[in-house]
Length: 199
Image 1 (cartoon, helix red, strand yellow):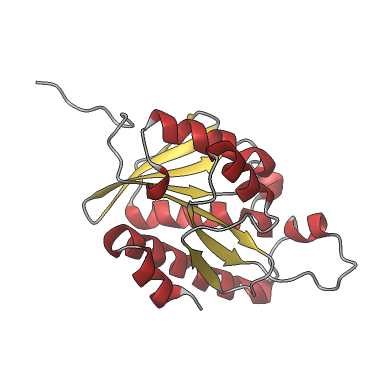
Image 2: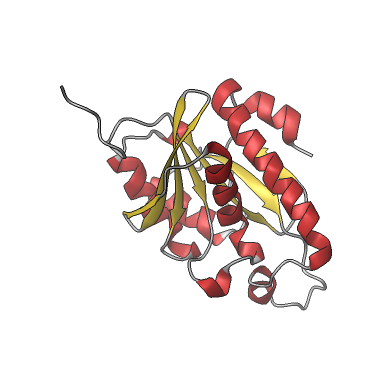
């Protein structure tokens, strides 16, 4: 009798990608909202442990009888597309079964936005994914991390800053909504998820 091994190709219904920068110095920063959400999804779905493959940490999860692959690229944000492309290709996951989660400075902390497709909106991680996958038709969930305190504030310094204590409860609420939104998309499609969770 033959058994399908863990992380075998063609065995996943969806691929969830959380964007961020690897390394202790970036933990908890605004730019790592995607990583924070990915970790919450893994925790919620009882992931079986992370494995490094194709420049990404990947974790197998199950959600409502669906096999889910949660992916955290380890290439740094502006090269995220390399890992996404290679993991999707290896596991034969089509573009319409990929959901990318990333930070958005145009949204207040605590807000999320679900989109079926669209431009990268100036986000370097999403830009590289669009380039490497040769499409903008990839589902995404944007997590609000707040606008710069003032126009002169350096954007890089802002996205690499950590959430303030009075923002953490709102971030946690947004992360919980993201986990629920992912399950909604997986089970019922993106339209119900947008109607229910876009705020």
